[in-house]
Amino acid sequence: MTDEINPFELAQKQFDHVADMLDLDEEIRAYLRWPKKEFHVRIPVRMDNGELKIFDGFRVQHNDALGPNKGGLRFFQNETFDTVRALGTWMTWKCAVANVPLGGGKGGVVVDPTQLSDREKERLLREYVRLLWKNFGPRTDVPAPDMGSNAQMMCWFMDEYSALSGQYTPGVVTGKPVGAGGSLGRMQATGFGVIVTVREAMKHLGIDPKGTTASIQGFGNVAQYSATNFVESLGGIVKCVSCWDRFDNKSYTFYREDGIDPRYLMTITDQYGMINKTKAAENGYEILDGDSWLHQDVDVLIPAALEGQIRIDNVDKISSRVKIIAEAANGPTTTEADETIKKKGYFVIPDFLCNCGGVTCSYFESVQNDANFYWSEKEVLEKLDEKMTDAFNFVYSLSVERNVFMRDAAYMVAIQRVVTAMKLRGWV
Ligand code: NAD
Image (cartoon, rainbow, N blue to C red; front, side):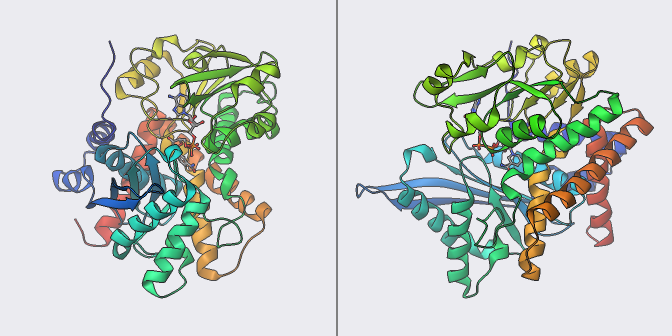
């Protein structure tokens, strides 16, 4: 049996569960169960072959009680309004748990970016901005790169917005290239933060990180820097990573008993996080089926690809040796699978805490854009480490104090911070 996954229903279920624990009143629940503003645009793009194609685009602004809406812009063929709603809702909780003064938003375009030329991608992105630009701005809503989008695309976003608004506005997006208003450290920020939370979890669980093992799903931006930091900062061994192969239309796991070399694999991975199978096999990597990453006898599992990957039909395949599940991706675990995970006692670092390094660094980028003064990479990563450590420990302390699951504790911290701001602003 598989549990059908609608990510927005999952986000609402998770919220309802904690709203009960916090005994939130009905008015506040009604406010927070749905995004405050939603946009759906149909984006016309002239393709290189002269044909006009129309793409669906979304932007959702969930809640801005703590500050401007903030969240990625995805280019993904399976994007739906509900995925964007879910991700926008999670951004509200993520910014709140990270303790940065930002609200939650998300955007998506229904497109397979691998099928577009760079010029087509640029036209699509610029048209999206033209349709929605009045709803964006450094004090309104600030997108960032996400699945299928990148620093170059953020630069086009900033350029188009600046032209339309008549003023250079680097702070309208984050995740820009360094040299065009971007922050040093942003590229590795999410994966770096994932491993800070793993390090802190290990401290509390009394685990010496040196020589511990990990299995990672995905090998895009987040997975790559989770892997390098697990190996280089913690002295751990990553047994395998995985990726989606768009030519075969299936996923594969790349395994080495003595540990993969993430820096090498990065040299044979394309911009969409697809590893070259032939080169990997020539270099001693075993190529296993796409689900194998979940069954490994390792200390840490890091889902870093997509939502809905740990489900009721596969949760029992997780090894009893696993101690920590670090949710680097957004929404990788269904609520039904969560129940099994709780019973089995795996220590979960919930997604919006685990992967909040990206948004925290985005916040640093906005601060640098506002001040027009840029920090060194060392300074950025030190500040990020401090913020992530504080965020993790705040949630962990509450989970111990209230004897609740880490996901519930993270939600309690986040929801309470948002509700406090809403009350102070006189909204409820
Ligand atoms: P990405 O596009 O760079 O990489 C995605 C990776 O997942 C690729 O390696 C792809 O091959 C792989 N993948 C896709 N489908 C797969 C499947 N079925 N099985 C195995 N692998 C598969 O994306 P990313 O930026 O690394 O984001 C990954 C996740 O982290 C997403 O859930 C995203 O929303 C979340 N996230 C990203 C950031 C960020 O800063 N990039 C921040 C927070 C959360």
